[in-house]
Length: 321
Image 1 (cartoon, rainbow, N blue to C red):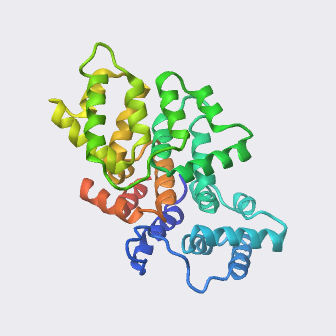
Image 2: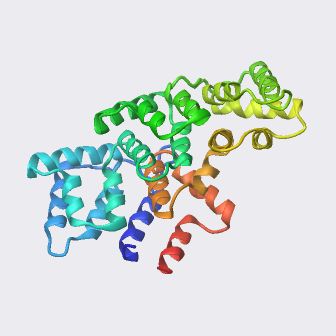
Image 3: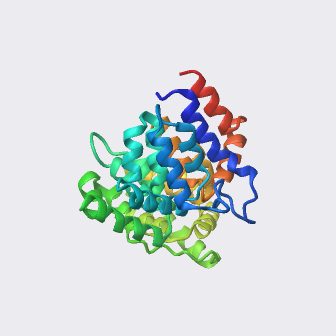
């Protein structure tokens, strides 16, 4: 693993942006840098990359103090002024975890998600939890943009990849999420929630076998608040919770998928706090991917769950390497 000081500082810088003055109701930890100058930053990065030994502290300081939109402008100016892509320059100058995180920071959110989906569906085995985590927590517009970028980058439709790399009802659920037709209305319809709860009960517990399509349809097309109300209503028609019912009725990837969707709709930040995948991959995916969304809330959730701050845990964990 990469030496403690560099990657540790990069992660912690992303956390410590919380000390700034974000706009009300903004739960990210990275905000646009004031008095931003893309030309100046590009020049600073070029000097840091070309300096003897590579000035990693300067690279980290610039990347984590700029918003994603600002980093995209730096990339454009860097290439225009040097004739070399910034990500390629950093790939040649850095290594290991620091390289991975720095390159992730240079991707747009859609490119980063597309990259994560590609990594989760190539090689031996598929990281099903990561697929669900991304697709179940992105807006319709974000999913459409991810699909566009995926096609552009990998010359294959994301739907085609999902069909090739997964199977059965799990594939059906993923394709349903990729349709990007989830109701995004934040208002809750209690009548619909009650009806959906009854449909789910009849499709699962109250029949021989299970109608998986009913579960997929409801869990992939309703908004998070609407699903939360549905789960409350489910308790009125059944003696057990919906996750327990799913656990009893389903097996394999589709069980994990639908349970993850249920949990993400009600406890999204708690699930992000737990993460999926290997430790370094999870840290990069969550910290980079949520730094301008809700990382502040995830950090708070992590402390509540584990009685230690995520920052402290990273320090303790890396000091053992």
